[in-house]
Length: 379
Image (cartoon, rainbow, N blue to C red):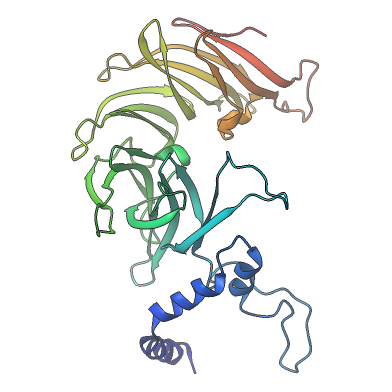
């Protein structure tokens, strides 16, 4: 068969299959008891050693790059953290799982007291128009009974940045994505938006989109940081400068940007804080210098005054050249002490242009004092 004949034959064969029964058979075979051997066995669906046309083993592993039957299966294991170990020194666990949409990878996990959301990325390419697009597929689990039971699904255009891109507020999901629209005939364009989806009740299973913002930032920019805080969202987009954007989420059916401030560099983490009863947002990021003979970067802490959402201000900032903090992407490395207004971050000096650390190199933690008019390292 040539390619066209093969596709036609595969479609005819697929149309005759009972996919509901097949999916149920796969779930049954998984035996959701925490034993990963079933997952691997069904995922491979072939021997570890492939055979050549002559029947001899070629000792090569199967292709694990994607497309396996179990590639889009999400399994969640739950247990009681207050439970004691049994006589066999184990803790009772409960497993659940289901298939999710998308053709890429599980990009994020969002957890609250009684709700879990997984986000899968999906990509598509139109061979006729030469255009590609991306989507985020959201799968919701109810954990109120102690078992993660899948009960709702939803999708929005674009891909999320990290776990702070999604947030549950009352009975709604708020999610910020960047969509890259690429074509062989045109330049790449981006669309940065916040979508609001309603979590269904009763027998309904679809999370419908009930509101969305206009495009956030400038064309070509993508979202680098997001933080939802009650009925406000703080968003950072970036290409060459950082627009710090405040979005009013009080009307979930009509969220809209109400304030914006452009500053050099970019942020990857935003932390709402309070000083003297006034609201601020503390950001962690970088600023690059491309004017010197050797481009260099500085780690950057910025304090934004957000007391007036329509006119955010930069209250203070601290830059340190040729330095880097893993807290930009490892958010568990951040320690904020609200009473003393101290921030603790890991820090390291970068290599200088000659390729080695100087005499003032440093690897360790730094304590910063965060003030209304100044951000400074203490020790």
